[in-house]
Image 1: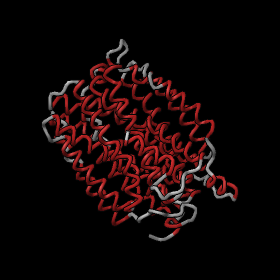
Image 2: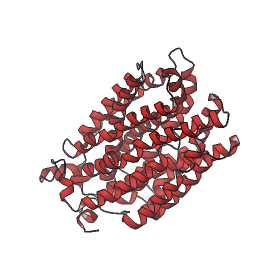
Image 3: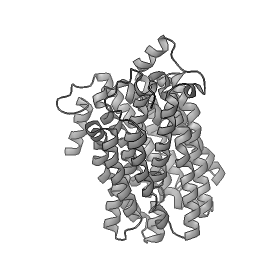
Image 4: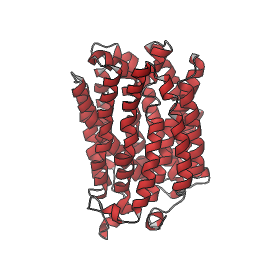
Length: 427
């Protein structure tokens, strides 16, 4: 109850007790974007929990499973082409396309009869899902005031943890049904269809309308590279790469590790993940407020440090209790680094380039770390016949990410996203 009350206060006031309440539309938008991001967590945790079952059902080795995940993750790169259309079609139209596309491709995944079928269906699902997630962050940057922007982005991203909790709770039950893992994807159709219906009240952002009215909307695929923003694209892209290397596989391989290296059963893994996801939620919901109070870099450094400790512990400890505590911190960290990155990326670029810049930084260049990390980990784990020693090394990359953030990326807290700011200044 105290947690639910706190969330309600955030929704009503959009910040601390002295902040003015959000408008009625902003509150509805807040809820809508949070629910939309719920499925980012559901999809991520579904693949993590189903990986051993999929390997068995589809007769895949560790390296073959890593290759399949790489193909799936390539969808997050191809999403670049869709995300950047937000600067041409508008934020509202892109959101509609992504919701409908993700609903259909997720349902299609349940009919997969081979690794190729599954990989292609999930590849397409990831294209739409990541584009939906990206445009949600653009909405948050453009529709909410600067002093609450971090909190809003943090709560929206934290909703993905709730998706992970729901997924962790229902997967063991759905695996017992006659259609097993397929039902995990089919069951998502009803809530996804509900979201598609609820988006009818969505408006175009006023900042996009203002820029389009004066003809400042980007059409060229490479336009951003002819502006001063190109330097920031490169720097932020490197930060995304390091972040994804350090966190993208933190939860993905944990079931494999827990089952084969610590002797957990499916039920024990589900229990640990559910407890960890529940325990991480209050922390994840507070991440946005943290970076509003202390800044994107100082608040981010604390979050990255917690993530590094949690991930290291999750793959080195032995007892169920200590592993669950470490996993809690790891899930929090893997979730909470995203509000930091989303806030920096959304705030650093001007409105006419915001979706394009996000697409370049996150979906195209940044996803190099996301796409190839599972492939490297899968091959290394097969060679060592263990996941623990491989995953325990990845937190080192998060330390490098913090150093890069402080040296190469400016503080963006409180920036007015209407002006040209950093993107028009020489670094």
